Image (cartoon, rainbow, N blue to C red; front, side, top):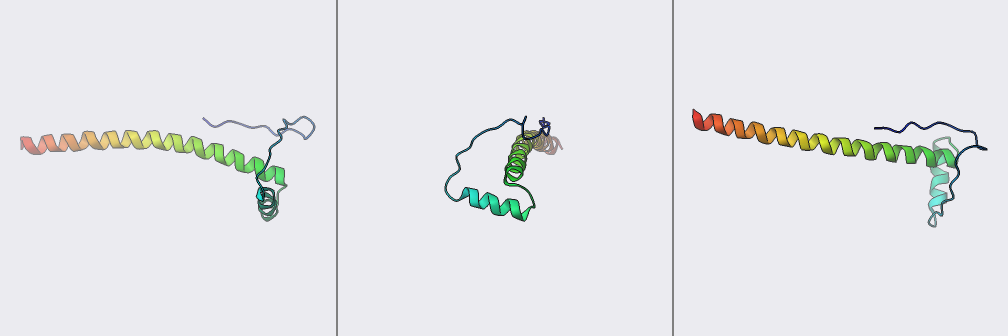
Length: 85
């Protein structure tokens, strides 16, 4: 299930201090400029995308498991039908 986020103004927004590895701040600054966003917006956007992608990966993994199970069932039925013929 996808989390809905609300936009708050900078005075009331939840704040969190992050220590960035050397060079990452510069990389984020370049990405933010390329995307016409502030560094904060770039970081928030990428975090949201990462969370959404994780959720999609989980759903896809479940679906793949169900499809593999169905393929196995159909292969067994085909084998059974072939042996009966």
